[in-house]
Amino acid sequence: MCTSVRNKESSESQDTLQLIKKLCWRLLKCIIIQVHFVFDCIVDFVFGMYYDSKAEKVPPVKDELLLESAISLAEKIRTKKITSEEVVRAYIERCKEVNGLINAVVESRYSDAIEEAKAVDALIENGIDVEKVKITQPFLGVPFTTKESNRVKGLIHSMGLLSRRNYRAEEDATAVRYLKEAGGIIIATTNVPELNLWTESRNNLYGQTNNPYNTTRTVGGSSGGEAALVAASGSPLSIASDIGGSTRMPAFFNGLFGFQPSEGLTPLAGIGLREKDYPDTMAATGPLCRKAEDLIPVLKVLMGSNVTKLKLDEPVNVKHLKVFYQESSGDLRASKVNRTMQTTLIKAVRHFRELTGSATKIKIPGSEYSFRLWRYCMSYEGFNFKLNITNRKYVASASGEIYNFLTGNSQLTLAAVVKLIEEDFFPRENAEWAKNTLENAKKFLAEKLGDNGVLFYPSAPFPPIYHYSAFLRPFNFGYWCLFNALRFPTCQVPLGLDKQGLPVGIQVVAAPYNDHLCIAVAKELEAAFGGWVPPS
Image (cartoon, rainbow, N blue to C red; front, side, top):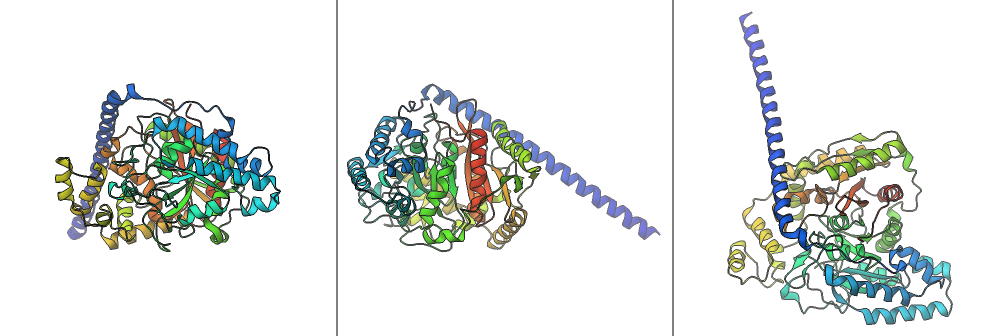
C-alpha cells in the first residue's frame, strides 16, 4: 500500500516536473522571440537612418513592349506583328536607362545581339512554318539574360572573383545553349556574389547591385543581378540557378516569379564552376520572369528530353487541390515573420480556402533546423569553397583572410570572409542526425502533399531588407534553403507590393515531379492578386 502510494506520488511529481519544464521552455521561447523582434526593430531603425534619404527607384517604363511576357513577344515576332530588332533594341535601351541606378549588367553584347535580331527578321521575312517554329524555337528573336556565373561563350566568367577577372568562357553553359537553340538572343550578363554564395549580389569586381523598387534595399543572391534587371524591364526572362534559394530569393526581393524545379531534370554543365552535369545535387537551373505564363515554356526548353518526367501539360483544376500552409520555420535564430508577410501568406491561404473549401495549417518536422540541414547537404555537393575562393591557387584560411581583411590587403568581400570563418571554426553537422531529420521531413511532406497537394510557405520574414543588414540576420536564409535540402519543387510567387512599395510574395511547394501544381497555383494567384507590379 505504501509502495503504491509512493509510486503514485513519484509519477505525479514527474508529471509536474515535465509540465514545469514545458512552461519554462515556452516562456523562454517567447522571451527569445520578443528580444529578436526588438533587435530587428533597432537594426531597421539604424539602417533606415542612414539609407532612407538615399532611396531611389528606376524610372517608369515608356515602351509597352517591355511589359509583355516573353511568349507574347515570341508570338508577335514570328507572326510579323513586330520585329526582333525592335524588341532587342527596346530592351537594350532600357538596360542603358536603368543600369546606372541598379548596377545589374556587368557585360553586354548589344551590337552582336542587334545583328542576330536582324538575321532572325530576315529569316522570318523569307518565310517560316509558324507552327513548327512555335515548337522547335519557341523564343525565336526574344532577348534574354543570364548571370555572369553561367558561362556565355566569349564573355567574362569571373564568378565575382578579382582573380578571375580576365577569364572568358570558351563555350556556353548547356542551359544557355538550349535557350539560344530555342531562338533566344542573349544581350547581357549580370552581377552575382563571390562564388554565388551570399544573400546579396556584391563583389569587389563589379560592386553592388541595387533593388529597382528601392536602391537602398537588397536584390538577394546569387541571381540578384538577373532579378533586378528583369524586374526593371531590362530583360523579359532569365536563366537562373538555385542551390540555396539563388533563384527564389532574388525573385522574392524583386517581385518576380522564380522556379526551382524537381531534382535532376535541368542541365548544370557550365553553371558556376561545374564542368559537367551531376545526377545527385540540390542545384537546379530555372527561370526568372515577370509573367507566370512564361514558366512552363522556359522549363520545357531547359529540361530537353527530361520534360517527359513531368506533367507540365496536364490540366490542373485548382479547386480540387489539397492546400496546406506553414506560418514560420520555427527557427528561433531567424527573425520573426513580420505582419506584412503574415498578411501576405494568409491572403493567399484565404483565397484558396474559398476555392477548395479547406486549407490546413501544418509544421514540417525539422524545419526549424533548415540552415543546419542545408549546411549538411552542402558538404556532399563537392564544392570546395576554401580552394575555389582563390581560383584554385591555394586553400584559403579564415585566420589568414581575417588578417588580410583588417589590414586592407584582402581581395575578398566580408561575406566570403564570414563563409571562411564558418568553414574553419564551426563544427560539422552530425550526419546521422541530419539524415534522419531530412528523411522524416521528406516523408511527412510527401505524404501530406501526395500528387494533388501544395504547401504555402513564407518567402522570408521581411520584404526586401537594407543593404548589409543580412549580416545581422544570417539565419533568415533558412526560409529558402529548406526546399533545396528537401529537393521539392518550389515556385516563388509575387503578390504585389507593401505600403512602402516593396515586393511581397510566398513560396508554393509541391511533391517531387509535381511541378505543374506549383505553376497552376502561381497562375491562379497572379490572376487573383496581380503578380508582378512595375517598380514605378
